[in-house]
Image 1 (cartoon, helix red, strand yellow):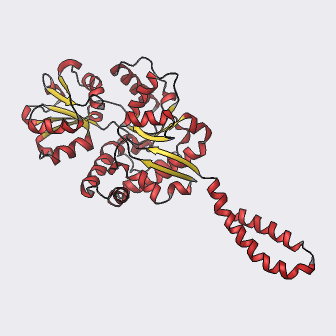
Image 2 (tube, one colour):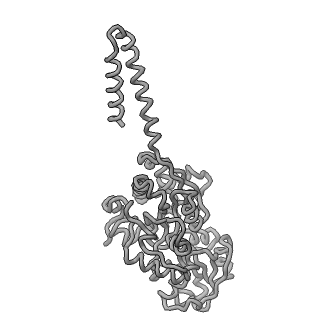
Amino acid sequence: MAALLQSIINIVYKVLTAMPIRFRTARSSLFPLALFGAALMIPLGAAAETTSIRFQLDWRFEGPAAPFLMAAEKGYFAEEGLQVQIDSGSGSAGAVNRVASGAYEMGFGDLNALVEFLAENPEGPGIKGVYIVYDGTPAAVFARKESGIESPADLAGKTIAAPAFDTGYRAWGIFAAANGLEADAVAWQNVDPALRETLLTRGDVDAITGFYFTSLLNLEERGMSEDELTIMPFPDYGVPLYGNAILVSDAFADANPEAVQGFLRAFNRALGETLADPEAAIEYVRNRDGLIDVEMETRRLKLALESVVDTPDAREYGVGGVDDERLSQAIQLVADAYDLPTLPSPDQVFDSRYLPPVEERMLLPEAE
């Protein structure tokens, strides 16, 4: 920008000095005005180069949204020449569909929902993951200890409740196979999300599935302590699925590769600060939604960071990327569990070209 200003000044100076000597007085008075006009041109030029991005979250403005909101409020996106509009969402499937439809250029959603969309729309609009935020799926089983459930084997013959779209429900076959259970070893109740945790606290069902950092807080809010629960996070029980990723439409990425790279750099920067100080990061969520319970959302953010962001793989290889072999395995597992009509390729699902350099993504202490 400084170079651009200097160029404009030089041009103005040459024009004014080329004026006949008899106009010297006018030239002297015009020079400051010309410089002022040149200065005004700079922000106008910068604004013309700004790229607008509509970004769809997977859910409400809760703790895990902190790094996105921080990057916006602290100007990290703006420094990359981006004007980012961040909207709350209503689930990963909705985020995937809205990005694919072109209503949003980028979004945040479950990579497994993306696999499902691509399998069911092989000729449809392209959409890819470009930054893995949740290195493992947040899906978990929550069971009442008083039901005699201490391990996956104890779930046989029990009743589990979840909404039909819940990742734990959809991927149950993967969890069951990894733990020596038949997929039909349990009875499922398809329930409204608002009733899921209530059914477990009342003892109407033996277990539920849900996101670890959502269902645990909901259960505690309803009077059920962690000591009363057996919690089985899918990643800890042999399920290698990835969780949520930053998504982008192929059309936008192809037309604006530098904007996608800039978005990921800004987010990566904010994620590092969020990992270092979650309490400070949650303030950006409160600034967006002043009605949040700060204590609860701080805990939700910490649970998310500890369970699915700070993982052994992320410590060893850096956040954001994928292991090619694991990604291929995860796609196949989802295709089998969801009974998908086609099998997307890893290149269709994830594109690492836009990621910041790996040394910039080493945001966590080295694995011991």
